[in-house]
Length: 392
Image 1 (cartoon, rainbow, N blue to C red):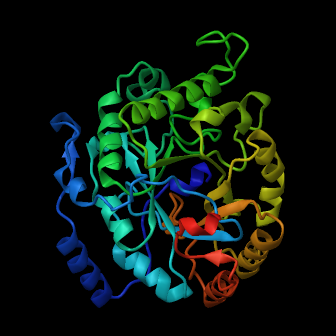
Image 2 (image 1 turned 120 degrees about the vertical axis):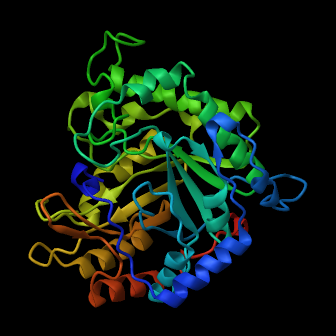
């Protein structure tokens, strides 16, 4: 992700009226409104209905396949990244010939609610939900980007947002099926309010250990606090993935992704965003050019932890590079070079930037791009349905 990517949230995924109507009818029939304002407490009656028969051992954590890589897709889901459209998942399957084993959605804290609706919709499609806990409020994706005192990492550490965190912990617990959870993604960038850049940066005299930069140190403490709230509420079906960006902004020694790692005890999977050019003003970079900078570092940082790419993609800019080739090279590299990557979630969205230029990261931005992706994921190496048995 880059700062420019979120200038506009104008979701533009393809669809047909009959498919949307069918999906809406199915969704409404299957789901009650489990939305709970935080002031109303964490009780979510609808979540009880979602409990799965997970056996005597209880819900299992997400395990990596022994061989291969799971497929996922994240289409942005609207302005707040929480408006799940089953029709979008269905059409992605029709377009690509493959289902998705994982799909993500976000909870922006300024929305001040907890709900099982997104979990139900994603699970109803046969995928594993990925909950992105996003501690920010308005203006969200609009400039100016910067520090938000109400959702500062120090306030999180002090417990000022425990009510909302606990509400989501209870929703996940009552859901009863496996959920992947992360907190404050891409913290080593400079576009989210929780980024180290806005939380003290390289300073060492404003928080904690005077030998550590305050920005990363606060993030680690906030992550551990959120994790602990889930843990204390007995959530056993959450698998935690830590999600920095593949490239740090700014590129300074205090802001390396390693400084933001919460520790082995607080992380189940290690993840990284991998993007090529997302706007017309960015240089064209191959998938490998970004991955080569972080792949060995991730393995060294967290030996034995499974690796994943929770966001990857590239825009359609013919004068800069060939998107179809970018897809083909990336999917081949996942099979042959970056074999420790066990989940790869394609970012497939189109948006309009503030200068009226368009960033089209959709899988079907052109027939050639779609064909390249479809051919790449047709390999048996890629799994489109999560099965714990594949870990054996």
